[in-house]
Image (tube, rainbow, N blue to C red; front, side, top):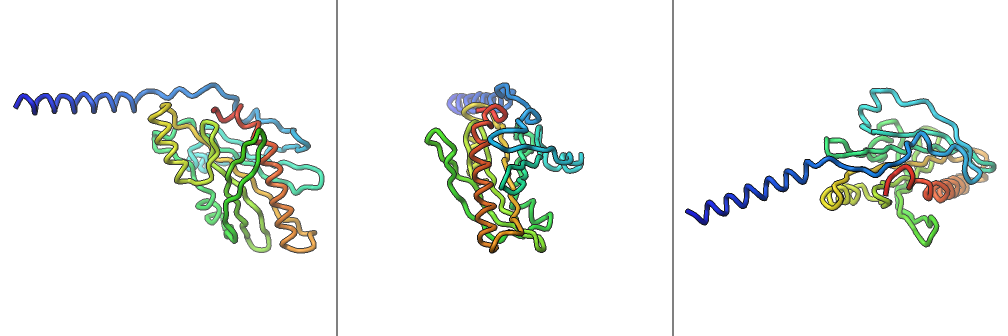
Length: 217
């Protein structure tokens, strides 16, 4: 009986410790808001796109976001979306573009993962998809970023969220998405897609070093 009481007490103490640890407030490093993300860099010039409706924001659950277009000479006009979640403990989670884009009428035609060198001997893996709606086609590059880590896999992103919650008591993360339209004046659709992908990759290489100020390591 004494052994059972001791074991029960230990279990109760362990459970209390786990609950106490899990309920600690998250302390996220100070960061700049995404609204302060530069409009001009590396030859790109940005413009604000219309704000999302409150209904859309409620569905997304983001704590901070930007949605802009960026243009550069001899490149298509790109779309940049960054959605930041300060915490994912209260049921908030990042929505995969593979779920959202078809809901908007876009059909994925090609889906793969590619590696992009981003400087300082660092290479990140990202998702690269081609989508189409009617006669319009676009190349999309996106990844999940948390604590300085860029991840292509949605499932690995969730695993890292759990591990980070235990290791650093943080669950903050972001989705970074770049959309590059195919130009109509290319000699062929293949060449148009290659030019669109090239622009998206170069844009990724330009913004990645800037993200640390807005998506905390």
